[in-house]
Image (cartoon, rainbow, N blue to C red; front, side):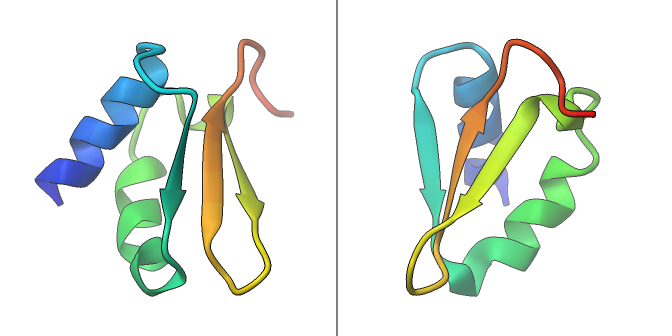
Length: 62
């Protein structure tokens, strides 16, 4: 869980361009992500096989 929070912060701070979450860990990761005050700035894109790649947007999703 702590590593998920660190990954979220790195993405928000621009230290990394994207993070990939295996489908087995998606629900745990999402639980933390939705609690973030900048949740609407994150974009998750499902990959073939069920993994999800998250990026951080400059403009929030609607």
